[in-house]
Image (cartoon, rainbow, N blue to C red):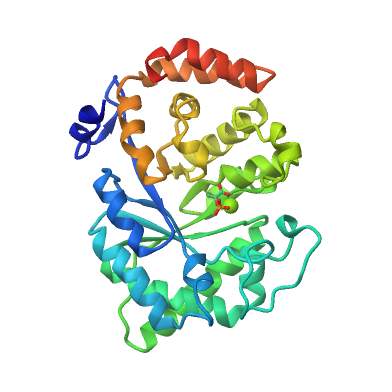
Length: 325
Ligand code: PEP
Ligand code: MG
C-alpha cells in the first residue's frame, strides 16, 4: 500500500472514470509546507495564519507577516495557496490582544468579527498579503463569515489597501481570488447570494457541524451529536456546491471531513472540486479516489441526501465502496 501511495505522489488526482479533483494540504506555519509537498499536495487549501499571532509576545509586524506569506508562496511555486485571514478570539487566547472573556466563545467576538472591529490590525495583515501576492499563486479567504455585509466590508478594506499600495508603487498581483469559509449555517443557507459575490467557497466542516448540530466541538458530553455524515450536514454541503457551480465558482472543503474515507465518496458525488486535509491524508485519499467512479458516487450521493440518519449513510457508503475500507 505504501508503495502504491509513493507511486501516486506526482500524479494528478483522478477518479476511475478520469474525472480530476484537487487535493491540497492544511498548514499552520511555513514549516508545514515541506510535508504537504512530500505527500503530493497540489496546493495549500488552508493556511491558518493565527499561529503567526499566537506563538509570540507581541503582534507580528507587517514585514514579519509578509516574510511568512512570501516563503509559503515561494515554496509552493505556482501551486495555489489559500491564506485565511486571522481566525482568533474566543477560545484562542492571545495575551497582547485585548480579547474579552466570554460565556460562549464559539458564538462570540472572533475571526472576521474581531478583524472588522480592529481595522488597523486587519489592514496590516491585508497589506502583508497583497505584497506577498507577486511571489506565487495567492488566494485570500475570510473566516467565520455570517453575513454578506461582513464579506463586502472585508473585501472593501482589501481593495482600499490594494489601491494604497499601488499609490506607493508597490507591486500587487491583479488576479487574486477572494473567497470565504462556509462554516456558519446562515452562510450555507444563503449560498446562492454569496456565490454571486465571492470567487470561491471553502467549506469549514469543523465549525459547520458544531453550529448546525448545536454541539460544541470540544464537549465530550455532546460529541455523539457531532456527526459529519448527518444528512442535515450533507444537504447543506450539497446546497453550497450547487449554488457555487450555478455561478461558475469552485468549492473546496478544508475541515477534517475532507480527508475522511467515509465522506470522500459522498463529497466526490456531490461535486466538490478541492479537498484540503492534513498532509498525511493526501496520498491515501488520492489512492481511494482512483478506485471510485464519479458517476457511481453521484448516484450514492443522491441516495444519502434522502436518508434520515448518519448511521444509515455510513453503512451504505461502506457497502457501496468496499475497497475504501
Ligand atoms: C473548520 O472550521 O472546518 C476549519 C477548517 O477551521 P478551524 O478548524 O480552524 O476552525
Ligand atoms: Mg473554523
